[in-house]
Length: 91
Ligand SMILES: [Zn+2]
Image 1 (cartoon, protein in one colour):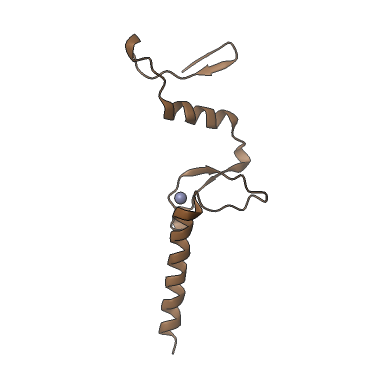
Image 2 (tube, rainbow, N blue to C red):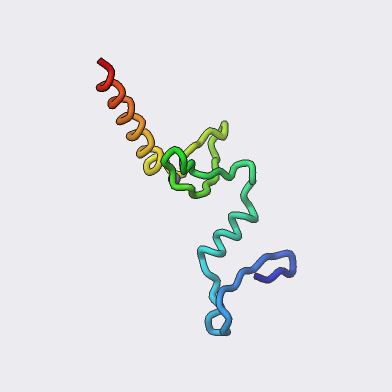
């Protein structure tokens, strides 16, 4: 990683021929440089999430999952199964 001229550049590889910026690393640096730390959240592992970081851009900062259609849907399905199990066990 090099700093200079007010910009940040990340170069992956040591031989001149391989000085190709790695897109994922560049994206990560760009994310860290521009993201508001107040909106960076982790998908909750203890509630069945994946633990990935995501940017919560919801109006009231209430987003819980990295993606509702992925981790959020799985968590909802697990809660429903648990409720049904309790309902069946209760005479
Ligand atoms: Zn997730």
